[in-house]
Amino acid sequence: MKHIDAPSPIALSEARESLAAHGFAFVSGSAAAAALGVSAAAAADFVQSWNRLSLDTYLADGGKYRLRRHASLIQGFEQPGLAEVAYRPHWQPKSYNHLHGGVFRHFEEVERGIAVHPVYQGLVTGLGQLFASLMPVTRWYVEAHQFRIDASAGEARPTPEGAHRDGVDYVALVMIHRGTVDGGVTSIFDAQNKLIATEQLTDPWSLMLLDDVRVTHATTPIKAAGATPTRDTLVLTYRKDGFLEPQK
Image (cartoon, rainbow, N blue to C red; front, side, top):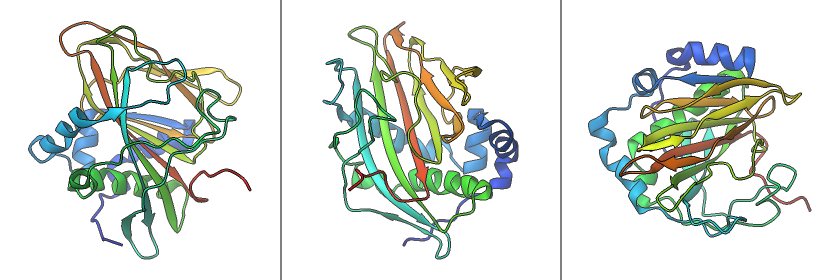
């Protein structure tokens, strides 16, 4: 595994406390960037890669508003490092994703230059370290999803499946760029489906962090409100017991 120097989770201590107490946390873009060592100059080419995402052809509503790339990684702690796994398709059971679960979904891979980019690796590793401070593990099985939701042809849905869990231990959503759009408000619900928080992420690098065992989440559709009607995010999921696979 390649060793990556990750920020201390103490730098996100308030987020850690909120996750432990409530099952979710929101972090401002400036605080997240400072804690995770992200600078605008270093991230410019990383951010530009969202312009090269491929169409998600699996949307059950037939929409062409979601573009994405995908990768799987293992973050180790006994021997610290981050290793990319040979490409594997994304899979979820229908119990977690009633619209798109139960099938292998093959997406274009995260580009090679992005997979080794220090900003990408720092985000994956730094957030994994934060989650490991809450749930000590020997390794995380991580899936990374680059998403663009494009409302140029009409209303576009970040979460067409509605309120859901991802079937992992922790989820991190990183806002990369919010264009000229309305909507995109995220709601978080507890185990009794009671609404416990809402937030609209707007600033680059702002974070939504979720304890996926304790809460569900959904994001409202977006609509064009100007010349750049897109919403770009990086979603990282962390699971201690291996990647989600069909039960044999």
